[in-house]
Amino acid sequence: MMRAGRARRWFGGLCVAILVLSGCSVELVSANAPDQPPADTQNPTVSPTTAVAGDATPAAASAPAATSTYSKPDNPTEKDLARRSYYADEIEVTTGCPGGKLALDQSSRVTAITEDCHEVRVTAPFTTLLAEKIDILIVEDTASLGHFIIREIGTARIEAPFNHVYWDRGKPQLKVTGFRCVIKPNPVSE
Image (cartoon, rainbow, N blue to C red; front, side, top):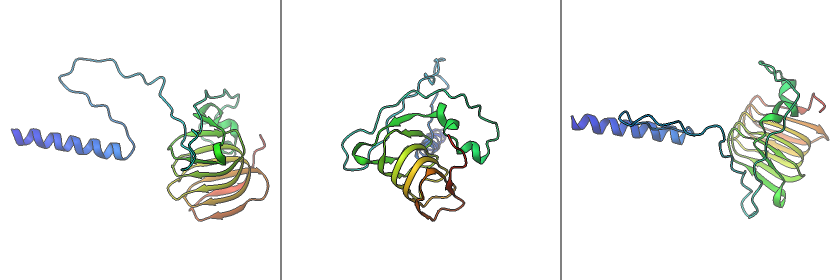
């Protein structure tokens, strides 16, 4: 009987460790605990993105999302995904570009950069970025499945697969080693 209890705790601990390491959250509920109200999920806390090492200035605080008149389709096309307005009501972080460099290291986050930036380095998957001008955009091999809508890019290095990068002006120098990326001038003018 004692071994079964120990095995259950060990297995449960292993499952929790796997979920935590994969980025999932877990709520443990005891079968003997009285009913408790669920945690408040209406107002999750969004922390600001972190600046590149050596920059002591915090990147930005969260900003409320802007309301868009654009109606999102159930099955978005490439043109829908290239629209700034497609993401307008999903923006979680609005930031400047302190020190001229910014690192985006939070998965599944929509970020808007309001200032010109010398270098933006992306290390997290499922990143969506709306930006004005970026001299150097680096999407590292850990940052797959992102959408980057930028008014002007000088240089872009895209190492991760399945990324979409769109720009409005200029002729950026591109180095794309990521598999099945869409890297081209924006087909939508907004």
